[in-house]
Length: 228
Image 1 (spheres, rainbow, N blue to C red):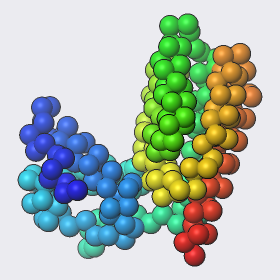
Image 2: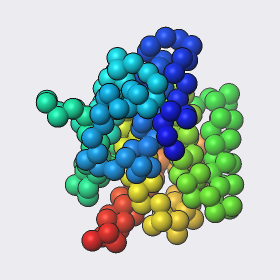
Image 3: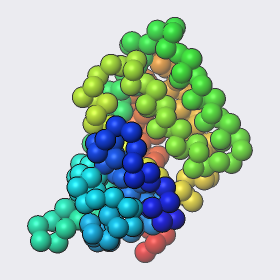
């Protein structure tokens, strides 16, 4: 899909919002493999395609660099970042403890008023699993984490997870075929994690997150092996 068809060049809120919009549009193309690793992102060409000036586009590329979807190199410009087995292992080594911290905090801090938002997401995950919507199921895992953020109230943790989420989504999209057969197992652990949260058992909830991360990493590695 041409980027110009999904980006409004004049969103309200000024250049800052435009940069975020551009980053989201380009990020989705990278996540879904439309812009493969190593692709050069030429500012002049992209700006023309999107109908924007180079200033907000340059800022969008910086956002994507922070999210580890893009590398900006001296004299070479912006390239889509690599995503090999070592990159995925490094990502999970960092992100797993962060999600465990989030889950422990939710178990400790939830209130009756905050629970409906979590239940709503879990119900959507169950519906996706029952309907065979693999991509929707795993996308709602991220929705669940975002719903946890207001309960936890840790802006630094929220920022770190926001920046790392696109890389995880990229891994999940890359390994979506391997994940199709694992939705049931994944959902079983998610349900167990939710019960632990309800029991305010942060230790066991954190352990369930570790199981989910290990399962996702195995599936990602299996996808790379199929490509060899």
